[in-house]
Each structure stands twice: as C-alpha cells, then as structure tokens.
Length: 145
Image (cartoon, rainbow, N blue to C red; front, side):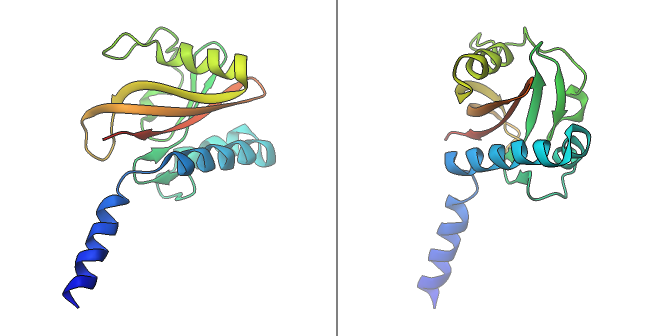
C-alpha cells in the first residue's frame, strides 16, 4: 500500500509541468476555437481561468496580432491591448517579435525565452509554441526545469 502512495505522489509531481505535446495540443484547440466560434468568443474562453480547455497547470493561451499587440492573454489580462513588439526578456530576446517572425516564416514553431511561471511565480526558461491563424499568432508554452 505504501508503494502505491509513493508512486502516485511521484506521478503527480512529475505532472506539475506541462509537456511540449500538451502545449501544441492546446494551441491547436485554440486555433480550432477561433475558426469555429470567432475571435470574440474564443478570446473570452482563453481568458476564463475556469475553462480547463485553455488553462491547465502552467499552460494558458496568448494571442498577438501581427503588429505585436496582445489581443488575448489567459494568464495576465493587463497585457491585452498593449503593443509588446519591443518587449525583451532578461537575456535580450525580443519575445513577441520572434513569435511573429516564426509565424510568418514557418507558420508554426517554437521560441525559447524567459518568463514568469504562473505556478511558481519565478522567472523561468520557457519554450513557447506558436501558430499563425489569419492575422494572429496563437501560442502557449512550457516551462523548463
């Protein structure tokens, strides 16, 4: 019985951080929501922390237009409406500009940067997965240990 409890705890601990596959799946679900329901309804779903389709542990959805303005943010609603094209992380990575560059050049892909983790509240290494849909960049990301 004790061994089962230890294994269960170990599994829960390992699952505190989302995986790359889970981030990609969430972005694909968000892209589908935008196409099926329109931007306004989808953005409201992304912003609702009770919506588990778009909020899972340290995963959430963010959306930028091609000018670098945040149009939806699942973790920080204060970012919505702000142009963040020139925002850089502690290492000087132009995060949003790089999201847009990847979306425009490849249609989808990964960007590495540093960002506050909503679970730990610490600035951590993060890899964001982004996809271009119409004139938007839709993304989510994983925090790396």
